[in-house]
Image (cartoon, rainbow, N blue to C red; front, top):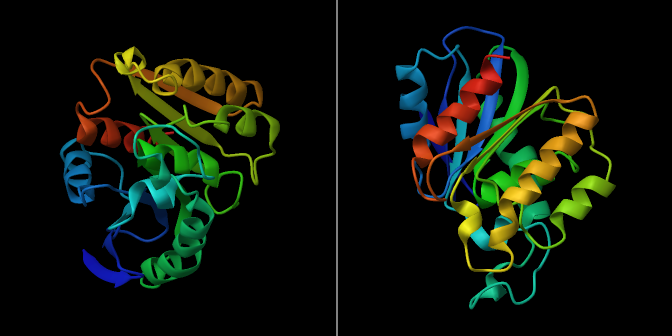
Length: 223
């Protein structure tokens, strides 16, 4: 394991043991990528490299475009996802992969707003062939229509979605659409011939974040 900083963000690399293994990029909120990695090791998951990024301005840097009056503090959603993707692919990726001996494929994963960013990124770059969005904020205004009407940069081989079965019980007019949006997008990607998994987990948005994140990454690695 090694860490470096770039653009005020902390990047941690957990390298694969052997050469020519997959690399998965995980954007984290609380720098909990190490816990996700430990959980995957406990489950005997296939050998891979995990790269975690933390220290983001979460709402600003992961939102695909600015949104109006979502919540009381809606000005936080300023639409910085394109800039973060550029940072991830042009600065983090080359440094993280410099010491790796061959890459089988790249994956992208994230929870909540990072799960929204994960799906959005597939329309903006062809670097990732597998993606996992756990409790992704696919309720984001305009996102479902954007995803259904736009063309993926490269059709991914495998897509994973999961959601808590209580997440749609929110009072907020946007949040309560999350299950409908996730299920419609799952059906959309399946209609494109993409191997797409959708899992409904017990609980709300903040329950079992580590194990849910690990489940999505493990699914990508075992396809």
